[in-house]
Amino acid sequence: MNTNDATIIFEALSSPIRLNIFKLLVKYGDEGLVAGDIATALDVPPTNLSFHLKALLHAKLVSVEQIGRFMWYRANIPLMLAVIGYMTEECCANQPEKCLAYRKASAVPPEFFEKKN
Amino acid sequence: MNTNDATIIFEALSSPIRLNIFKLLVKYGDEGLVAGDIATALDVPPTNLSFHLKALLHAKLVSVEQIGRFMWYRANIPLMLAVIGYMTEECCANQPEKCLAYRKASAVPPEFFEKKN
DNA sequence: TTGATATTTCAACATTATTTGAAGTATGTC
DNA sequence: GACATACTTCAAATAATGTTGAAATATCAA
Image 1 (cartoon, rainbow over the protein chains, first blue to last red):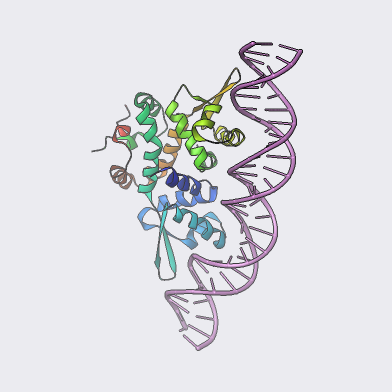
Image 2 (image 1 turned 45 degrees about the vertical axis):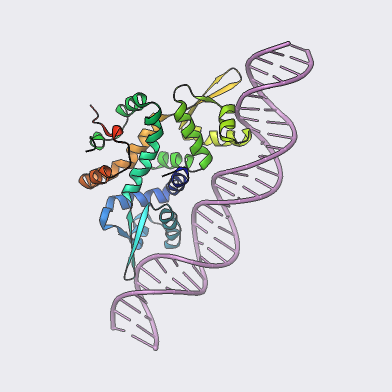
């Protein structure tokens, strides 16, 4: 994860349509969702959906698997976590106590911050 | 934090220049940095820097304080943490065990994941 | 008050992103 | 094979963003 990767990822999440696609896919987890169902759920014309899915694929925020005529899309949650890591990295590295204080006051759900290992 | 806020924030972080500005400001913490020094550090013409700082201000990712002729810019770290919260929310809410498993394998620095209270 | 410094705003232009309908590709069904 | 379905690619129009130099604003220093 570097500036370039992060830029592409943020770019991919910077449109309401794409952010909603990603959030929807997170919700469906490993099962994923077929392009047509994403289009229906979010009321986006198929052509336009393809365009946005391409941006998410390019950022690697989603993966796709063809099964018959259907394209199954899935969210790449580990990558999302890597971006979070990237964002917090510098903060923690440069002023750990301040970062921790801010984090304690943040809206991040507590169960997410359980000790790793 | 809703889709609209998040979109504006991701939009603000979706250009390499703006991402570098933000990272630089995170590094300087509470002290902040004056516009001219950001311009020098990142080798961005002042006019262009102003344009990008405006986007970061609009997203509220940075704040600004005028002191004499100087404009001191500072990163809004709590907001950054709020976005992280927003991104993890749905994941944790919908499949907590999967989310935790992914997190354990993620590159997020371990000290960031200490129990909150 | 004059001139220098710090930064922003403006206007023009250049570049990039988004949307749409029509056409294309591939798979499945009869 | 002929036709329907699922989805993508293409091309053209439109919209949004990014960049630059010149001018504006505001503070400071002599």
